[in-house]
Length: 285
Image (cartoon, rainbow, N blue to C red; front, side, top):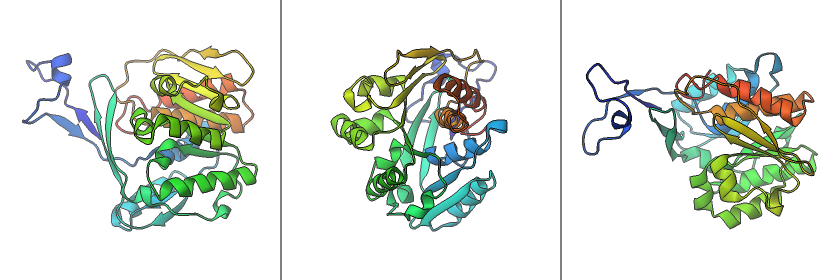
């Protein structure tokens, strides 16, 4: 996690201070934090205050000391950690600009090496949440798709997060739409850029509750068969770092739905939890 250094007195500020200078040093503040979209959602679900729900993380981490620390930290939030271990732990370099927007450089490593997991790891689950990053590489993509199938057989609804415009383009938009059509998620999360790329009015999304986030602008909620609803985002100071905000939103939304909240009320809960991560580095409140 790399933040730009705050301008000192006499140092260039504004846009010039936010632009990287090629071939030389760029002052920065570096933070190392536990991350990963699915792990973030699990941790936030456990940190949702009175709305907290039990959460389980399923994934693959390295057979190394870094994974020991990461799993222990995640478990310290009350998350039930179920992992396979092999290779080296994945890392993401996140560059955060002066507006809080982030650019990511993922090295998935062991995260892409998940193989088939026991269907029993879904026992007691009320929802299976799947970031699209899980489909970025094999063998994890096949393992995740099999887990989705196990959830369907067990009557467990599935939510999918579009996760990344870059990932979807690399995967292939048409191929991704076929994937959505095969999964038929109960809930589909996307930001405005992802929603435009995929055109969430396509038939592949017709049976899903669609939630489109747009930063500080209103979130659009589309319930099958009903008109779209715009849910305002409460005013907040400018974000220092948007990393993890979408994961926190998903956690707040799904936790509220599991408590019986209607989609608009669940969106309000998602906004509240997402706001808690905007002013500190990484996916932490």
